[in-house]
Length: 335
Image (cartoon, rainbow, N blue to C red):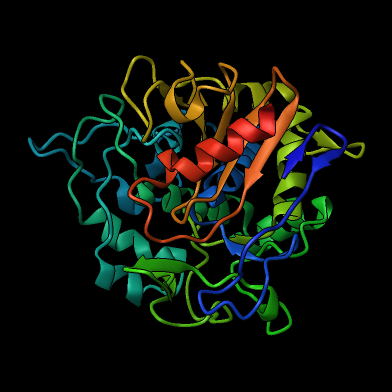
């Protein structure tokens, strides 16, 4: 998908939607977008910030007191802020697989996070951190007084017309779900979605994973990306101020080495291209976006005025953020 602020330039679907080659990909096929959920979580936080209900430099313990005692290895209890969580510089530890599997709500995860030591002094290093984004989802619940999935639906998905974006697919949506694939020898085999622990995407007895639990379509995510490309507004409705979008897409991590590809920095919930090279060589400096575990990607190139969205469900990329498929798509889209 290639789109400008107000129109779709190119939308195409190719290939099979399942490893057994029983159904073709459609333009409205539904994908697990994994960590492409993170920018959506960031927008939820920024909405509450604009309403004066939270501030990015507030300590997280103000909202989640159970996390007040987080310590570094040398026994210090440093101040951890919402900004640290958004930029993956908090040093928070992760829940174990067993702890995550047992959780039924975002609040259930908090004791697991509270029991882990900090890996480093907040702000001193960058380390991709699922627990931080999950904590932000919980903070959205606490501050808004609504379940995380309800807040997203009311404030983002319904107004933008993102009708297929959800943590929980319906039976009616299942025929359009793209089954993830992995290659073993010459065969493509079904791959599991780790967050579902063997359950189908219709399974509802699990927490709304603010770090990577959403399913979506290319047309849906394009609406979200167009809103950001337009400075926080779409179809005459404002979701964020242009200043918040600018802040979101500005590097917040100084000279820290960040991300999974060279030349990147980190904004608020998004990767920012600082020095285009390799897989990002065709993008403008300042382009921002996020990838997903199975190869999906969104880029918002403000200088060119375009957004690029690629949906794919391959579980066997060595580095989904640096895959040759992504490079080829981006190069073709911008030629």
